[in-house]
Length: 362
Image 1 (cartoon, helix red, strand yellow):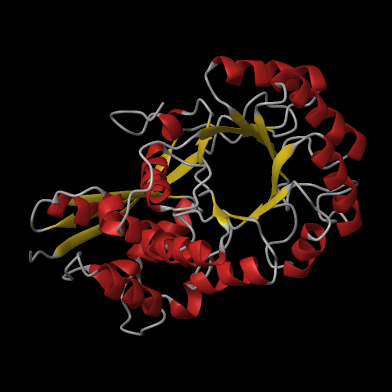
Image 2 (spheres, rainbow, N blue to C red; image 1 turned 90 degrees about the vertical axis):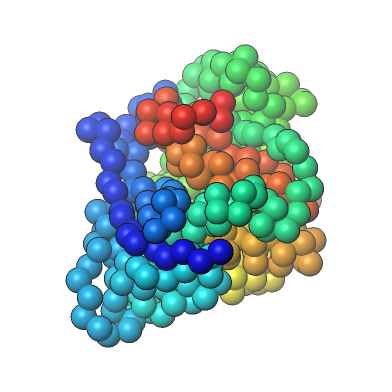
């Protein structure tokens, strides 16, 4: 099949409501701005994706004027006139077009969304689900976990757990909020969650590395303090602890991992490219890799990460804290993953996050 890309459009959606105060919110209502990518073709087929990035910066990366200098170009300039089915080649072309300013951060994030939108076009053009294009379907269903924020009190934690159990969730992840400012409170909050959940429900903790500290927002929690907390979390049968120290502090992750027995160490939502995930696995001794398809390099890189994780016998649980569009892409990745654990489900009531699809996932 021959077709050409006619346009690449980055859109910024605005709820008009700022992100809630994480120390006060019962449940974060979600981000104010969301970035969407739409790729149009001369065959009338369009591909869509969402991106967890700073949307206004991302829009500039897509639509910047062309200066003819590879490494400083826009992503739109890399794609218009190309065959959208050549996903691997276009990934490499986009990477080179933004190489000097966008190999990480917003450049890679917008590349990731565009890559996923190209897979969307391929699936529609060929009449195949994305898991089939990836090459395998190991499961028809995947368990979703409720992804939410820590509540400020033990009583509020118990109420939250009860609510999610009533919705049918069998796994719940709490992160951010008041977590990280007081070790005793941290433990008390997780204890309350475990008491309300009972022994059979999986609980996870997201450390939110750049949002927590004991005494100020710029001082990281010492590794030894994380090790102390790990001991308590293991006693409470927490399934994993994720993203709790700087993503480049691989030695720190490894030091904590060496002290765990049942608690899994999870990371990867801020990483991009197969090389960075290999370092997380080998040097960081990560138990659960969490590629975010809107950050890691899209489905093309997500497949590479999945294959690497399978070879190294490491579990995967894609990070997907955005709209139903990202959740849908992540579901196809979960189907392809031989060692899939969970689908992340953001339980925020924000309309942009959970009402962006004609047929919501939940």
